[in-house]
Image (cartoon, rainbow, N blue to C red; front, side):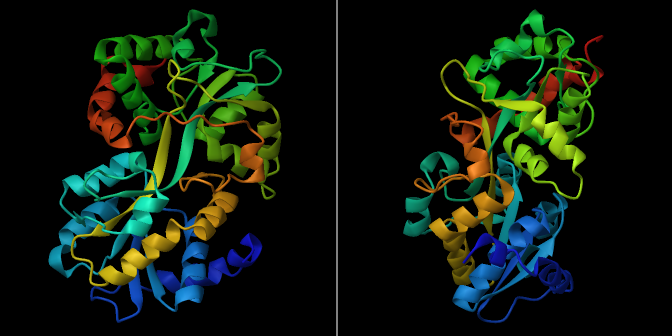
Length: 348
């Protein structure tokens, strides 16, 4: 099935799913999914799954409060799966006791160990990298390291969103794992001193700032480059993307920091068998390919290639740190952001 066909009729499907808010378990051959993912990025995959298996997927779209919702619903929760972004959210779900281990040889074969919880309580589904957007006109070099972002030569040249955003917290946590707390704190203070202004906006706003000449470098996620390059509704974003080149930072040879979207099997899943079947589908070649083409993220299943646009940016050498190790340092990273007054900007 082509991506174009898979993504057809998404609006109608989303409207139908929005009507589902049942507090009771689904009937046989159904599975209930709570998700924080954008409807247009995930619903088409569910549609393909239903077409191929006959299993209906009921979807409740929301934000991070869905984790607490499942906890509050307790044994009566209709949720079978929680599909979300960021390993920190997946770990929080596990820590709150709303998950159960997934036992599937298929999933274990499809998803490398570093992208799965050691106890089986969360599973990665796709991957994005925290990279550097660089001005094509004003940045001559084509390689960079995370350490270099603290080099005084970039004073007043770096833009980023708030240091407390999960995307940045993940990066900062990885630096704690790599460098230790003391060196990571010195590094973070150095990055703060190199900021052009107080952290603000989202990753697309950083691209716009580079285009406008307000800074030369910015932290951003890979998939936003693809979304900007293909944004026909707001063609100015295509111009922002054209002004940028993608640099994959390295952590002393360890690679580029990555994060994941993923899923957990709810502790009280009423449709456990169907839920695991859906997870197996989402980790399959077909779904991994569809996902990669639609949202410009990297497949996690070995052998499934990124989209042509993503491949054009160059090769991603992903940091091999187990994401569970990074997740353990997220709280410390958040405290560190406040300790160095990162969000106050370079004058702090």
